[in-house]
Image 1: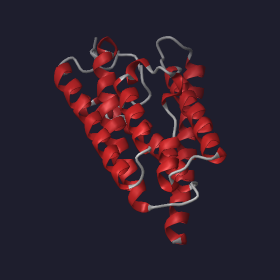
Image 2: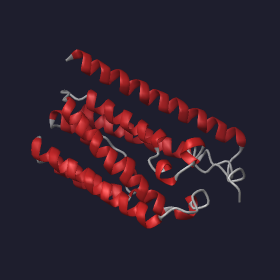
Image 3: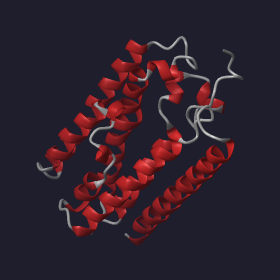
Image 4: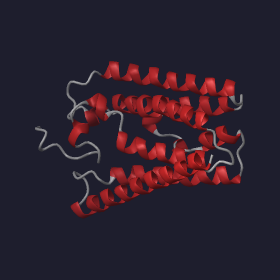
Length: 218
């Protein structure tokens, strides 16, 4: 099956992302949305500390962007193998697991600096990253950790944000599934892509505006 006839099974499996499995595995279109929501929860916390925010982003880069996504690719080999027939599954999985451990190491460092209770988020986050391909429990994408580490407390606002953003990200994944042209009609996939673009734009805009407001307001 040639590249031209392969169905679009993921909305970001196009263009430059289709050239190399290591590059595609970072899933930047989706990762940037998740980083934007992390920024939202961090900047809406009662306190904002730039160093804690940057460390949170670093832990997320290792644990999710590299770690969980690479593990997901190796667990879904039959799904991605036609697009990357020469992928080295063992190497990708190894890098993924090491990246998750690196993300957890950053989290442990943050726990030692700011709050030992943050270890709870680190352990749960690492566990869920390793189980990312099965996405159980379904509230895998939640954001209380980035809210908690800013002021080292969780209140009703933080809990509400975590629940709301967790639901929106689950919806984003469902919209991504609907872009599979092989199984769904052209109108449905077109609408799903439009909703994904709106979701991304909203996340980028809100995250950037809130971050700028925190940095300028210092």
